[in-house]
Length: 544
Ligand code: ADP
Ligand code: MG
Image (cartoon, protein in one colour):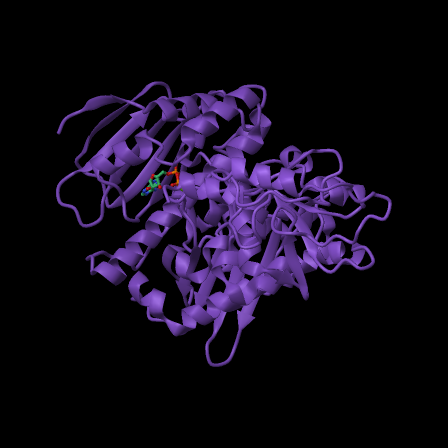
């Protein structure tokens, strides 16, 4: 193959534009991103050898940073898995993440919004914040022949060519932008600056990060596995950087959870609850799961067996001492120890949230706003956990604008009220303006306002909380205590009701007099065991 000039995919081009014109103010993080990629590549090589029997020398896996101050270049080199020519084109030239186009639309609107770009995590492209030309030379482990050379100025195109002498692994060379007034801050050829960045962002990386200048070689990171260190010895900043490395999120996490189990089955876990829902939280193909390590050796990413779907936003690492290094995903699914760890993690995550409710109500409110919709799926998936899930749940209510917990609702229940009243619908205003609401409002009963699609389903599955039945005010006859001030309707309604029932026989089962209305003339009510109109609609949309 010879040299080709190719175009970046449209989304990739837009993202590069944003990077070149640097909407992210902290430029230092380009180095973190390169080191993170190198570290991933080293993990992958070690794993390919371990699990697929790839022949490779893994005795000195490392990352090397080389600076040439005169030429103003900075190179990050790894002896990891490398990439084929096709992989370079596919992985570096395009963005495969789902929801990219949508996110870019938002980014354009928000212009200078580092939070949004942070949520997206642009990885490799962040190099164009500091470089006006980037070269990548790589060779895939286990392949014959030559390697591949990629080069781009971050504009519309890149070139790709053979690289005959490339060693296994990947080297990325940045041609740093010319110096300007900001030099003091942004001189990435400065040894001290590089040391500082590596220490701050990448200290925990499990492979040595070496800096070479002339004959001198210095290892810059301590390589200590963060989850194995006592919490008191690790700073929040260190945890945050680790979180960013494993999650590809650029925002600090909301909460950090450490776990350590000793005894018959030993494991350590370090979990993070993000501070924001990823844009693909409700996309089926989104990445999810935890990282699995066995005695400090990385085994796999995205291990779904370790955390249930409804807690899919939780990120982190589980390091189990007694698993085989060769464990496959298939075995993982059946492994008794993995199931036990998963149960413990769930318990710990739920109890951590519960603690937040009292220790840090703002954090809890953020958590629920971002992830509540996903957490409620757990009410369908895990019957055993109804109670702990409902305990950390909040719901919209007719009482004020802030969501309420069920416990708080029960405390406010009126004298004689036996059940928890709720009404489901598509929006708050739809629910509040429902005729079903009239009598409840008139008599001062609080009603939960449930507007997420999943609410339609879990209320039926769950049935009750703390001995109180959950009761839809749109279904069946609700026995509200009679309003003394409201006169009984006078006269004989039987002929009218009979007439209406007959006329509407195709549409309704029965027409009856009701106490539940105050101003509306009539409303539709389902039988107690009928499905709700919204649920009916949802099933119909699903083609059932
Ligand atoms: P992310 O790391 O979030 O996937 P990046 O933009 O950082 O996104 O990298 C894109 C992809 O390019 C990576 O997923 C990986 O497959 C590939 N890649 C980047 N750097 C390297 C490297 N040093 N060695 C091997 N593959 C790499
Ligand atoms: Mg990356």
